[in-house]
Length: 288
Ligand SMILES: [Zn+2]
Image (cartoon, protein in one colour):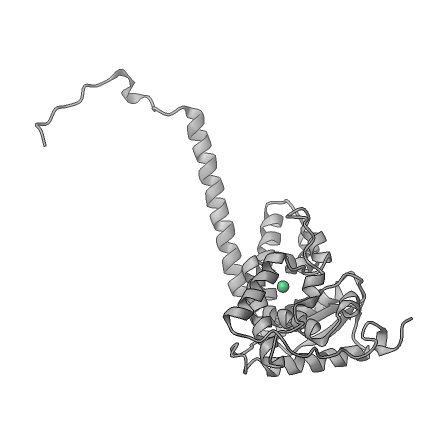
């Protein structure tokens, strides 16, 4: 350290060296960043909190969501009993697959009168498959993979987490007087499936894959449905279109699962389990 030399005073000492507009921009940026942090933080907190709602509340929310769906839900079709049996068999393999204990409410299976090939779960463990999906699968193994993927979402409480985030959207929106009012809540929650993250989808894929191998002893034919229905190349153009096209699986996701079969040394050859005849028709009756 040299001797202390006082700096010479300059004329500009009392003038802020930054342009006032820059200060304003900085203020706006600070407000925006703080807002985003609060918003993101609330979203995470809400999605955590939502997994802790009581079983009775969850059942009520699930029933309300199901009732508000814009398409008819069928419960009395004999195919529902078949789906319930297949799902019970898959659930029994959860232990063999070492996937941990499931904590979701008992399943309520419904068929959606919808041509789009899709399946979804909601709060309260409503598991819905579309007519389109039942008409499109060519082996039980394919159908089982789709069902197992949905069980994965339930196992990880994804519908509740997504709902928690949606609630923050709605609450903040109405607080600021923008966006949807709370009367639009069901439609926001219905689209909860949209807000599953890529990570949640990957985790549900892994869950399904392990479950399928534990159940059938091999993974043969299980990805057939997804291979025939690869995600159309629409990018991030329209999330809704994407959902209507069915939980489409991108080529990346299919390739990742194929590689994972190798890594885990899981067999990929084996007999396909046939589907019951006329599964694409109400009550298994011939539908021309
Ligand atoms: Zn999914």
